[in-house]
Length: 202
Image (cartoon, rainbow, N blue to C red; front, side, top):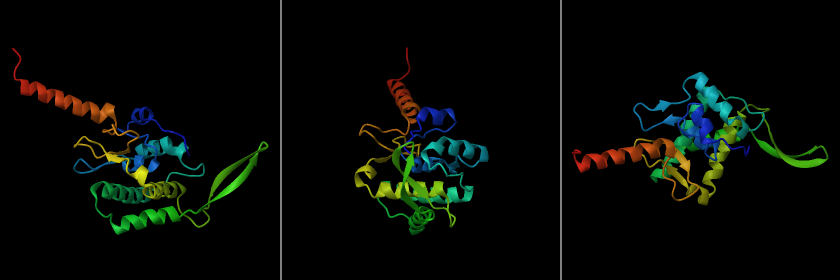
């Protein structure tokens, strides 16, 4: 599950941002909340299929594409938890419960596997009683993020006021969800403002 999804691949597939270290953050960023009405980037089944295909190597091998209603429910809960943290407020109790329920819906256990004379540790996901592996994995990422104060302190919202995307800042200088999207837009807007302030050219 440590496979990296890069921003270029995500943008080539038609999504504005992605490739964050956590699938949970990429999922939260599939709804644009800075526009009215909010825009769901997974609303069309074909777009949803593309997004899940991009994330497939970051999820357990046995994961399948979750039901859209379950995705929307978990995404809303994840988004509320992340936004609440950034806004210094308490998340809705239902959001906490939804993340916990998704994480608990598919228990997992470590196991040793012998292959070609080598021993490796693997995780077995127990689906005997239902639940969705992809959503359980994503919910656990959120729980692990909140359990790691140092990492949680790197959670940011894009500095573009017209953007709602979230990211984990690897450096303190990162301000944009994607510098080739919001960074460029803000720089262009500032440039235009400076030109206007300078007055008409003669």
